[in-house]
Image 1 (spheres, rainbow, N blue to C red):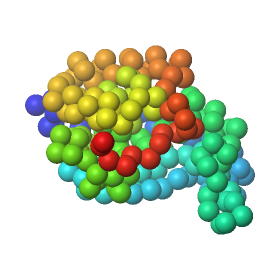
Image 2 (image 1 turned 60 degrees about the horizontal axis):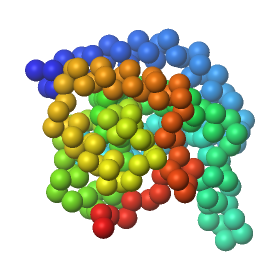
Image 3 (image 1 turned 45 degrees about the horizontal axis):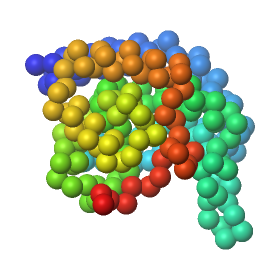
Length: 201
């Protein structure tokens, strides 16, 4: 009952309330990014939702579009602005995703939505992460976030799908607040974000 009914109702209630409360901050951050990113405060990208169905995720645009001499985008660590780094560190870049939750594309808690191009790279077990709506935060995020391997991250995602409950979601909420306060796991060991997934070895 919680998985199929109450989880969605709680998502609507909490995300709607949170967005109203956070709207002044949302507006302020958007204005800053308008100036930092040449009028582009938001980042839009197709991501797989429940059952792998694509939707458009919205986040604050924490990286600029600087390119090298070859015309290709520079590495993430170079394009990540100082303000963008702060917004990521405090997880404020996730505020716009409350709109995805309200629309029903996402849940507050669930496996993070990754890239559409990763879909054919998952093995059968890993693909189970799409049995539920993706989330703003999840079990993998409170157990390492970008600082753990892809394989470990997917193991944690599937474990969440198999053990989903309101008590587990409540635990993830409290652990997320703790992780945000400590700013843990934002970067991997070799990247400002997370290395590209190229399939399980």
